[in-house]
Amino acid sequence: MEVLRLVNEKMFECKLVLPGKYYIQLTEEGKQLYEECSMGMEVTFPVELIDGITLADCIPAFVESVYLEFNPKYEITEDTKVACELYKLGKTDEVFNLLVTITYPESDKEFHELLIFSQIELTDDCFTFELMGDQTMFNMENY
Image 1 (cartoon, rainbow, N blue to C red):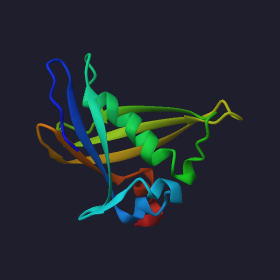
Image 2 (cartoon, helix red, strand yellow; image 1 turned 90 degrees about the horizontal axis):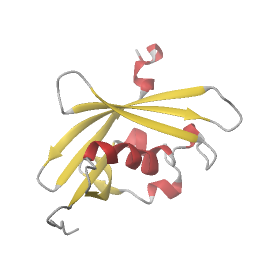
Image 3 (tube, rainbow, N blue to C red; image 1 turned 90 degrees about the vertical axis):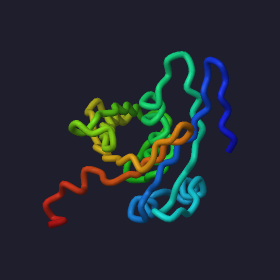
């Protein structure tokens, strides 16, 4: 994809990398969005940074549309309310969390997921990040 630079706008390319254990959880439709890369599977998306919109504004929406909605374990439908908040992890800019709050139509109760991401690369025109884990990594049965 060609990256365009305009006076007050900037086209930016982002890449989300999923390791195999997260990729296999996706529906077949979701898997079709991804291509194989050296670190697993990746999906690329353009971001237009205009009018004060930052990369941090775009990442939650992108993760929701290419990972959460295509992962059957979240059971997201058109009637499901999903809110995502991005948080920095510690003092580093290279690791960040996405707190996902899900409210299903038949319930007023909120359900939460915590996704942990790591920055792989940041250049003038591309940001690549990887899903490192979800809240199942804190399950004591894994140890």
